[in-house]
Length: 216
Image 1 (cartoon, rainbow, N blue to C red):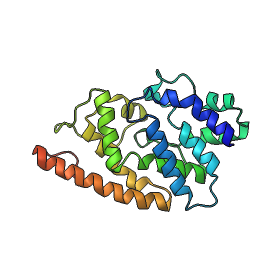
Image 2 (image 1 turned 90 degrees about the vertical axis):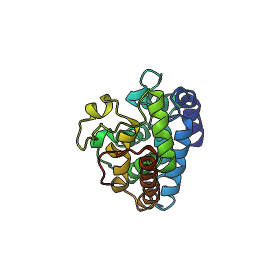
Image 3 (image 1 turned 30 degrees about the vertical axis):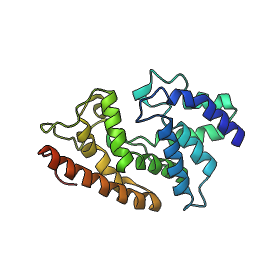
Image 4 (image 1 turned 30 degrees about the horizontal axis):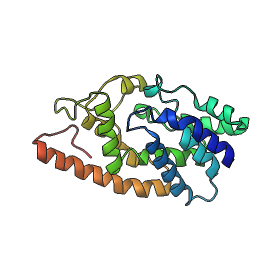
């Protein structure tokens, strides 16, 4: 699949570079690296499928619909991927997104690897950087002490409300550690989660603010 995979990279690299820094091609490279590290602990996992799904997992992201000229399916078809591969990768991609806690069920070990790999890039130091990069690109406040984070929401509600960047930690990022599937993903997430908690504690100290909710 090497040549076909390289053709997929050729097609999507420029598309990802149109996205803001939170979801650019560097994000894709980090997710692929995370996925490779997790897959190394799971010899039964198909690394070629994992790398392809990691590469294409954000091409169909609704947040960037106006910037993406190709769908993941079209990219694979143009590269000459087999139908079975296309179906498998699309199934994985559909189960990656958090969607306000309304994610689709994982149906394969490859899907578990890619989801964990993407969520690892959403937390820790890089997750903090990406959160504020996305918030800045969308003109969102750094924090809002009057804003109450939501514990339950539909996918539409999750995507439509423009919350402050710190609120996003409580609505998603601090939840991800407990949602990891693979053992390696859980191990790595615990380290990154602790860093985020320390960051928020320091942010409260520096701003003299108290964010909601308080339970971490």
